[in-house]
Structures are given as C-alpha cells and as structure tokens.
Image 1 (tube, rainbow, N blue to C red):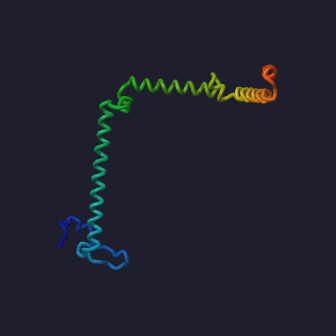
Image 2: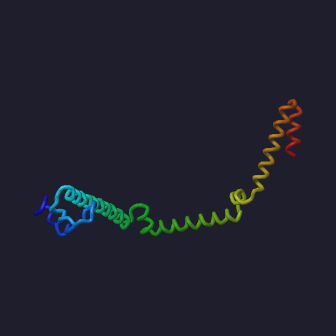
Image 3: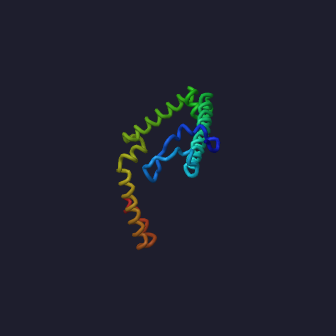
Amino acid sequence: MTRRGATWLLPLLNWTRSPQSAELLWPAYLMGGRWNDQLLAAVQDIKNAAAGAKDFMANAQGIIDQVKSGKGTLGALVYDETAASDLKATVANFRAVSDKIAKGEGTLGKLINDDTLFQTAQSTLKKADRALDSMSDSGPITAVGIVANSLF
C-alpha cells in the first residue's frame, strides 16, 4: 500500500512512536494524514536545500575558475607574479613607515609620540586668547603693544 508515489520512503518509515505517547504505531505510510504530510514536507525541504547547495557549488566553481584563469584581483594576486611582488613591496613599505612612526621619527611620529607640540600649541592659544581679551578692553593703539608683549 503506497501513497503518492513515495515507495522509496517505505523502508525508511518502519515503525515509529507517537509524539504524544510511548505506544507503538503502525508505519506512518499506512496511517496517512498528518504523518504523511509532514514526511512529504520534510522531503520537499531536503530537495530545496539540495538545490540551494547545488547552486552555491556552481557559483563557487565559477569563482574558482575565474581565479584559476587569473581574472580579478584574487586571480592576479595568485597567478601574476608582478602583482604579488608589488603587494609585498607595498606591505613592506607600510611596515617601514609604521615602524618609524612608532619610534617617533618624522613629523607624524613626533606628533603622535611627543606631546611637546600639543603643549606648545595649547600655550600659544592661551596667550592669543588673553591678548584678544585685552584688546577688547584697550583702544586700538595700545592693543598692538599688548599683543606684541603677550606673545613674547
């Protein structure tokens, strides 16, 4: 006795237990109804998953084929020796620059590692602020003298 052409499922079904109780039931294919619908839905889910996996593998194979033919950035890095050596040189240069910065060499290295520049700039801004405050209280002629004296 088979239903809907699912004869290949018969050996898999065998005996089953009811989810509500521990009593043994007849094989699910004999019962039909809810069990049969659930099994058919599970089979359809498996078919859909297999089709998705097949599509994924086809796309992955296409990417692999492009890389093997040297196309794209990854293909160029893998198969083009010039691109690979250029990348290695770029990484080496970047490492050298970052090492110099970390050691405090150069303008950027000093700016990052030495707070003297920051302190000097902060002091200069405070002096300029005081000079501007003094100018608002003084006339135009004395303002030039105040600014000159406060900066030195």
